[in-house]
Each structure stands twice: as C-alpha cells, then as structure tokens.
Image 1 (tube, helix red, strand yellow):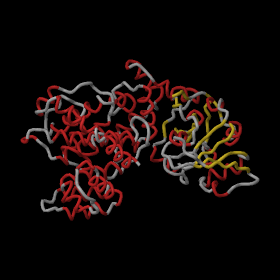
Image 2 (image 1 turned 90 degrees about the vertical axis):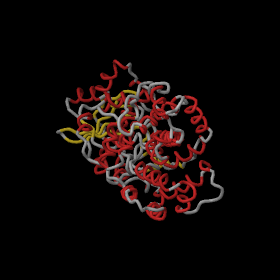
Image 3 (image 1 turned 120 degrees about the vertical axis):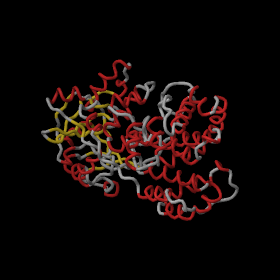
Image 4 (image 1 turned 45 degrees about the horizontal axis):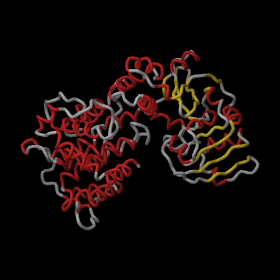
Length: 479
C-alpha cells in the first residue's frame, strides 16, 4: 500500500520554513551553509530506515546511514548504503586503526538534538570526521534521515559529497545479502563483519536496565497474601498504556465475556482473574520498557508477535496438564510471553551489534538463532534473559523458563515451565510462527507432562483460528 507524503523543493534563496522546522537545528544549519538544492520528504512516523523507504516508495538501496566508531584517535562516522553492513576487517586494515562501535546508549549524547534512533549521516553537523563508502558514489540520488523519524532528505550524490566536505572514500561495506554463510564458514564471516570488542563488551556487561516502577509494585503486591483486585487495579491505572492493554484483552473475544468492560476492577474480578491479570500486567510492563528496532527477524514486531502467540499456547497447554503438576494459567502465560526477554535486552543495550545480528539472520534464515547469537555476540538471549530476571528478583519459574526453553533435556526445578514453552515454540514453528529450531515435538517432554501430539496440535489449531485477534494485540504492543 502506498502512503502519500508531502514533498517540498527547497532552495536556499527561498526556504519554506514549515517543513524545515522538522529538521534538527544542527543539520538545518549545515544544509543552509553547504546544500543549495535538496528536497524534504515528510511522511508518517516510522521507526526504521526500511520503513521510511517503504512509505516513501524509495528503494532501500538509495538510502544511506551512519555508523559511529571510536578508537584512541577519537570518533569517526562511516557513511554507507542502508542495505549494506560494515566490513570491519577491510575498514580497520584500510585505515590502520582498531575501531569499535560506539554503544547505542552513548549516541544520544552525540546527536543531542535528534530523535532517539535517528542519526543523520552528516558528520560535519556534529564535528565528526567522516569516511564515505564508494558504493554511495554510484547512487544517482541520496536519501537520509536528518535526525527525525518523520522526514527524509533527498539530494544528488554530488551535493551529498559537498555536504560531507569531500570526505575520504573507500570500500568498507558489503551488501547485507552477502552475509549468507555455511555453518562451517560462519565464524570467519562473523569475524569479518563484527568489531573485535563486541563479545568482550557483552560478556562484561554490568549496566542493568532498571525494572519499571509499575513492575516493582506488581511484584510487591504478589507477595501480599491479602492482595485484592482493587489494589491491583490501582497500580495498573497509574500507567494509561498498560491499563488500555489489559482492558483490550478483557474485551477481546478470547475470553467470551458478554458485554463491555470499562474498568480494570471488573476486568480482574469478572473476566480474567487476579492471578492472570497480575502476570499479564507484569509481562506487558517489563516488555514495553525495553525498545528495539521495529523490523527484522529479531525486531520489536517479530518479538511481540511470537510472544503473544507463544504465551496463549503455553497457557492453553497448561490447562491440559494433569492437575497435580498444572501451573497457574497466569504464570504459564507469563513464561511464554517473556521467554525471549534477553533479546530485548541485547537490542536495547547493544543497538549496533543487534543490527548486525538481524542482518546475519536475514541472510541465513535456516540457521538456529542461538547459534547465530553465539557466533555474532558471544552470548545467547536465553542466558542474558535469565540473568536479568534473576537480577530483577523475578520468580524462579520465569528465570528457568527463559534460561532453558531451548533445552529438552532440562528436568530439574520448575522444568514444567521451560518444557511447555519449548513444546509451544516447536508447534508454532511448524506453522511458520517462530524461529528455526529442532523440528518436531519432543516425545519425552510430552510423556513427562502427560500430553500427546494430538492435544498439542488441536490446541495449536484452535489458536490459529483467532489469528486476527492475536495479531492485533501484537501490533499494539509493538507500536
């Protein structure tokens, strides 16, 4: 679907002020000084360059992006096509420098007047030295975000070079499609396209994201044996977005309530139940506090879509377990919802590295995701997720589900939770909902949980019949 957008041709002698005001001050000043001819393309708010290219009907190959690097000599901005990735081996050899990626959480201090996640590839506006990939010079025209997610700048390649101050040019990037590699060749490819210090940085990662205040209050309430629906509703009401999500859930056809639910206390008492809403609110609160890029195999949209489907299926399967080992529906749902929390942490904290991981996954769609993470980042999302949950003081059932949901051989404490998640994930993957993993349902896990394949497939089929409802919920959570 094409989305209409407004286009202005801007001449320095006759500037049109309204669209220009959307551009951050530093970039606007540079354009006024060095770019006599350029076009401003206003479009609906997006989250990524790929989305901006799509709504403006521009090939991604005509977009450029910036990667900010650092070493002992200082900061350096590399400018390359948006559909390319840095070839770190070629870059460091060419410049005779040992460059690292600037952590994503530091970029905001460099681009202070820009929106988070939108970093304009014009280093002179921020006193940064620039190198330009020669692939950009082959473009007839160049498009880039000027520091806002509602605007693109378009200009000729010659004007763009002038804007950059005729920077040093070389070949230091490759098309993302070239990241495809056979398993045996993956370590070499990763070494080529990943900066050397990524793995040590993540292994030494000690900067904990803070547990959201709402989640802290929910956890405290969960420990109170006298807690009631009114107290839980009061906590949730402090967060309007969270309140809206819970009410939408209560009013959805999923639970078959006849009538309209307009307040949280009714949603808790009459429809969803205290335990379920407590876990639902805890999961939504935690998940929404960590932001990652929207698109890509590991992006926010994919995360919430899989999380919502898995949570619902884990909850449904838990109700089919023998009564003596059956967990509460709410805790089962939350285990499925937050199983991949570690991926949110990695993307939130290590944004440049997460970009590379997404590109490797796109180029190698059949490779197990944990193996990709291990090769690219040196750590897997299950390990990071469990570590963070433990640091936050979340229940052991959640920590264990996050840590062992890929392991059919885990049968120690609270094994019911990761095994239910594993079974649900494999059932969803058989329908194209999820990531590459071992195919087929694990017979031993089914036997130990008192389930059978017919039950799992029947519950999965029932889930797929409410696909539109689950997709709508996932879209709202990812927004």
